[in-house]
Length: 262
Image 1 (spheres, rainbow, N blue to C red):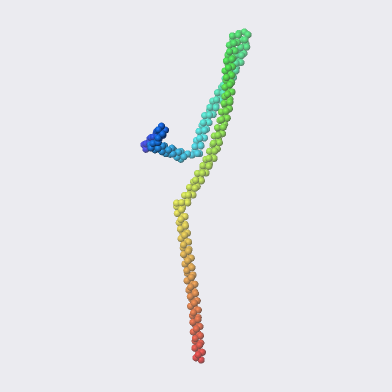
Image 2 (spheres, rainbow, N blue to C red):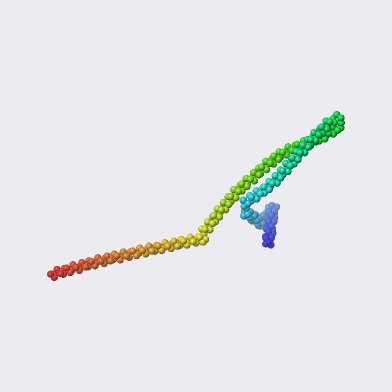
């Protein structure tokens, strides 16, 4: 906690220095080394804030909260409309009462017009006063009707906007889920193609290479063995032919000797 507090104080100090340097530059038109340093720290701070904002941003989560906030705001808006409608209904009842008062004082004025002029004048004055208030109330009621209609239309538009946003969020959430699944599959594929699995592949390739080497050696050995047998067979044939020829020479010689002796 102490370290965090100290870092926060240092950050505040750097921001103050940066602001002071900017103000000094505005006043004097001269750039200072401390001003540049302060500005660099301020930019670094802003960059860190932007990075933190990017790291913590989540469109689906933020959209969900935005919709919830809009619904709460909508509830407050609907309550305001409800209060206006209640006031409008009460004013209509008040207007009905005023109109009844106008009728009453009009009737009184007629009754006393010939017999009691003072009472008739008093009734007329009261009637006129009630009429004045009633006319003002009628004008206000008419204006409020237009306002209520406008508010209801706006309420309907905002409700539709919230509904559309909720539908969009469902689609966005599905797209995000699909993207995360695709990312997981890519990560899993990369894991299976490296590490121990890569070593197993290399081992299999080494075994196959060793087997091929052994087969090649055997093939060469078989060819060498076959050549020796052919040579031995050929030599045997030569020896047999030579022996036969020698035997024939001996027989011819013996025959010639016998002929000479006879």
